[in-house]
Image 1 (cartoon, rainbow, N blue to C red):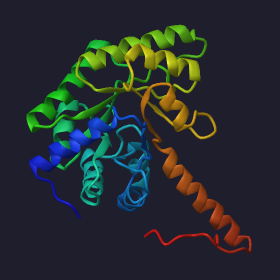
Image 2 (image 1 turned 90 degrees about the horizontal axis):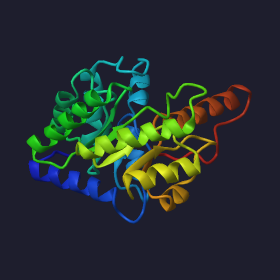
Image 3 (image 1 turned 180 degrees about the vertical axis):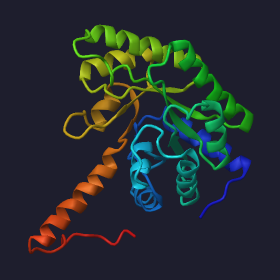
Length: 265
């Protein structure tokens, strides 16, 4: 287990921030507990970790959407932070009613970056939440790496013109950048041309997206389009659970566990 000093925390925050502007796209397969964090951290090429709130909630039997108690959520994230020397970013959903205070508590356990959903709140409210998180980072003496999320593309009503959706994505994204967030997260953005347009409007290495199985572009293509970061949200946990269910089905059908199974724990 690792412990943090203020200097360590500041250094990890700076490392995470620099990874967003490096030549290579930052790829973050999201983790949800200590063993998933250790396995991902030990994978060659992994340079930072990000938690998935949906996956952590599922681990404890809660639905997504801030249904897991914040104390329990933070306890798991703290365990992940202590299990690795890599920078850790926490998905703290829409901020649990007080984005600045939630960010402060996350920083106290060693978190140096985070996702914050706008939940389609009025733009002025969403901007104030971004400002509160960035203020919490400054008060702690670190360059907190806020991945300011807008759900405009994810929750666009059926039939809404995509040009209008992208226009609002860019409007919100620019407002979050002006409020101090270094990057903007746009789930629901998977089309190549839309990604190119949003990345171009926000600026090189300012956009982050999520990789959706069977739908998304690969990381090399995203990098070429100017994307700073790609994460996986709950999908890495679903990959693991799919493998578990498939192995269980094979076993109860009279087969055996996969021969290539590795001792990763």
